[in-house]
Length: 201
Image (cartoon, rainbow, N blue to C red; front, side, top):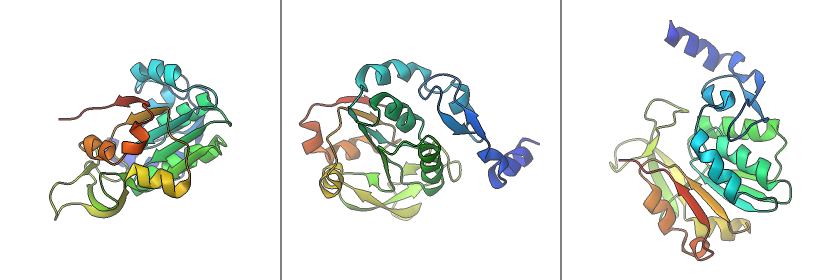
């Protein structure tokens, strides 16, 4: 029954019905009903709200690595406001489309969403859709034959190419690829941004 409901919500327009985020990182923002209803119910990543509140100030600049549906991107954008900047990277296509939708729904014109993965080199990586498209557990493959090929970029290269403001705050949740993401950001790290990073075994 659950899988039938899941398919109905994912492949119909019902999952795109607008709701308000009740609490947490993006409280008050417009969101979509399904999937990951914990995002709009305000029960996801609630322990992180204090850090986003502390380090994302009006006019500031933030970077969201592993943006998924944009919960952090939207929440950080609410805090830095129109004079600030949020850069979001999400290489997985299904998640990135939903992230862009949430950014548009909230008219957050100061959020820039990119489809490249942050890495130690600029080129390509292979991403495994662990749990299916749009999952929170997609990861960069260490096996040359696994996953789909997607573009990757050094963060220093991206920021130079797009003339972006260096971040004051970086959120990193990229499964097993955090060290590689940071090794391509030497120039950004020289500015000593605050970093909140999720570690995975």
